[in-house]
Amino acid sequence: MRAASGDFPDFGLTEDERREAVLGHYYEWPGMDGERGEIWGYTGHYAYFPGDVVDLHVSSTAKSFRLEILRDGGVETPVFSRDGIAARWEDTPDQCSVDGCGWETSFTFRVGEDWPSGAYRATLTAEGRDGRPIASHHLFIVKPRPGRRPGRVLQVAATGTWHAYNSWGGSNHYQGITGPNRDQFATTVSNQRPWCRGFVVLPKEAPRVPLDFATPMATVPRYPHMEWAFATGHSKKYASAGWASYDGHFFRWAERAGYQVDLIGQHELHYQPDILDGYDCAVFVGHDEYWTWDMRDTVDAWVARGGGAARFAGNFMWQTRLEDEGRKQVCYKYKARAEDQAYLPGGDVTRATNSWEAPEIGRPGASTFGLNAAKGVYAGWGGCAPRGVRGFPVYRPEHWAFKGTGIYYGDLLGAEGGVYGYEVDGLDHEIRGGLPWPTAGSGAPEGLSILAVGMASQVEESADLPASARFLADEDGRFIAETLYGRPSDENLDKVKRSNGMIVNFPKGDGEVFHAGSCEWVAGLLRKDAMVEKVTANVLDRYLKR
Image (cartoon, rainbow, N blue to C red; front, top):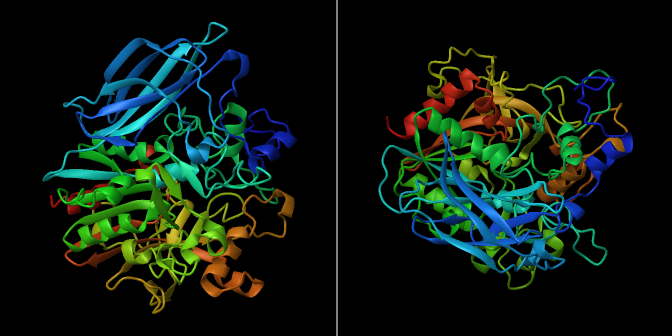
């Protein structure tokens, strides 16, 4: 329900609790449910082929549990169930977020040879100490076997970003319980732990990050998604990453729209560089922020050979490194230049886990997908354009992607569905003759056409916004200023704080890239925005060579 003080929803929190919801560090940990008891589980890998054996690691206060597995696609399809699986409580290392939980294998099962590629949701249920049921959810991917698969879309789940945001155990690449004072984010995170609450399933009422209403005049911004998470026991990061908030919405929409869709994770791009070869169209959606050098190599080479890459996603920001066969992800982020060993003598600085736009890395995101995170980032939440456009302002309505939409110059594409935000990617550009063009120093690939441009910000900046109420403030803006210009000074901050989000299209070798640079494109599909659905179909159909 709406709060009496304005349009913000009221989740029953006090003012102090609302502050803690936004600025505090709360997370999932073994024993958090106290006397009720609990059950948690994870699989040894993110993805499996049909026929592979899956190892399930479970810790529970109950002596046994039930396992149910379904394919989470256009139709939910149950594929496996088993009652009475033995369970026990496992000791968990304090730094399990970094080192992994190390739980013993509780149960194994074989992926069916007839299980289609897709996302498979495992539900673990048991009886709590008070007689009421306890449950948790895990998700793994069944990937397609290699081979030519004409007419099928290959969706690449943002497993690098899932890995980065997972808060289970106390640490991720944002906040943490690492370091001598147990207050540092983790530069290394493990996937040998459960997914945090909200990554696999969410109720329909869970708020998305961008506000779906205009903040009243002279009102201090609030962050309903974090307030809801705090009030309901979900991860603070549920709305920033995961299958439930992003990737799943596209997968289900595409199957319901009649497309045949296979699924892999970004980790497959890293370890199986030929994985794209059987497809004409690959899709990247939602919040797709963390990539390795090798993942990009795979995509770049495939597009140059004739592939069609469609990225309906935002915030192409960080380079990562993988260790332990992908079980661990390394990203020093803001600490990179001070702590990442890639900067030491003899290190390969091009592999530093810094922003892709750091000059020493020499590989801005625009060289793969046409846009850069450091020229975009925040829109529609907090104090960053909170009353801004909810759709993309269109400049080139004659483009093939808009065929059949009836859209005009100056229209907002996707405003009804709220597709613009909460993090976007952009480019330096100039307006000539009423149309946007990349500037000479933007790094835009040759032949890039800018179809739509919206405003964004790197800084929460308003005379009416007290510093104590700012979640984002100017920290990220100053980091970008230092990354690009050497110093986080006020002068350099002024160069980066006004930014943008774009839709672009460009040829690349024998292939082509279409990039709608916004995390929230999937919201338009979720909310059945007809124009967003039509543009999405136009892109898929072109790249499937229909």
